[in-house]
Length: 314
View 1 (tube, rainbow, N blue to C red):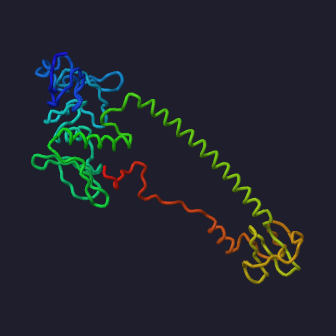
View 2: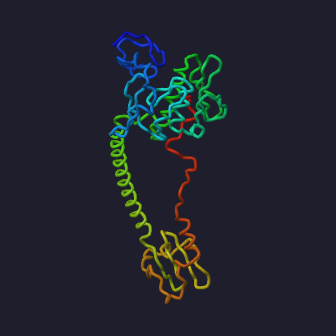
View 3: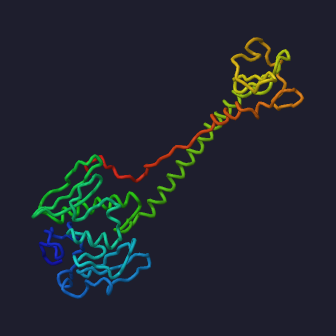
């Protein structure tokens, strides 16, 4: 490898023996210097679809770079900034081209490239004279400045890494899925299946306990007659009474409150018209009990597992 002290693409200083630029990530091959002046920059002329579903492209240094096509993959879409698929953006314009190439809805994503956006909940970068500012506007409207300095490549890299991090949280990979992605997904799937099995088991145990409690609470449910002075109904320990003139009403005391052997007054849990009284399970009070026992679902209007933490500084 020939001795070189700067990257032929971004001009960053290089250490002896480096195979890739530490700033822009471009491969540094033996033929990098000579090939950079040859006609290898045209992505449309030098792209081929590999068997693994990825595109193999030849960057300006004639070095193979495999990239995932992602959303909106277009072999001819190379912006005027010099950015090419597989290349790490080093300027604001290159970052714009990267986002446009991947058809990113930046405003909806809350990323503002080249704009000093002042509203809450935003990531952004802009140029202010000779300096570059990388910022985050938090949910309370305050601003946390990530970087303010003259190094454009570093500033762009900060926002680019954050942009990818937010994408990866949502399982979006504009930079290409990692080599072990499928392995990690299988491992995650196994973990989720194991968690689901534990949850189902716990729910079964809780459900069984609940049913046992319910069975015990309602073991004595049914109709009771006491001295032919009307008819009672017991529901979960609560007592209701019908005297034949008015509909069922709750009462404080049932037969068992006055007599030790109240079970002797039990006449059944199924209504019989021959008793001469109305059916408790057709009464208004029964309907009210059923409505009160129903559980309502919870609304999670603003919930999302991938929401950005807007209260932090970055």
